[in-house]
Length: 260
Image (cartoon, rainbow, N blue to C red):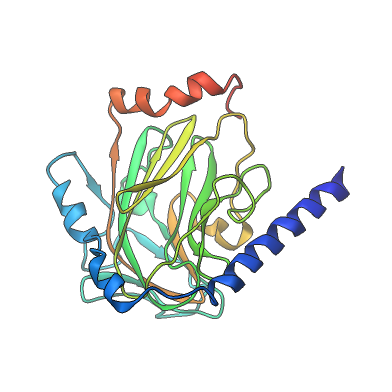
């Protein structure tokens, strides 16, 4: 059984690598086609929700107050520059963790939404992967991992974002802002990139944990991998009862297990 498991992991990894390899030889769209496609204004979309909900801001746009630089990439790699929080490029991981104790702000463990606006300014891998809590467990939303394309949740049932059913592919353009929204209940995780829902997954009954590279980001933090990422907005809010019922509707229908 164990041999079969690792055989499946190798096959899935090979599929990811092949997809990335082939993408470099795909016929590019013409410049005219690119001009016709409107660029999603992530910053404007975020501002449109300023007064719609009651937000708690985690980044003041001026300093690292409330954040702990883990310094896995060395000193002065994490900084604030031109009103953005910069995860500078390191030899491997660059990561930060929110300081609940020092800030006096308690991060909820369920029934909340995290919103952040971010972009990759250099490199070719994940640039603002979000580690967040689900009850007493933690997972990471990966944006652009495994060579810059993989989107998903790590880890579910010991399978990474490149291996489990939350996995998908997206080409993140350098210097383009993206709006990420992560909604969490005790049963379900949903993720939007810009205005598209990319993950809607019932976590109830599954084993959840973070990979060792980002475990120091718990309970909430961001990481980049050999890439520089910038964060413009980081905030959370409590979900309404109506939202919780709607989000967990599929969990009620499809899952009969207890969360563990």
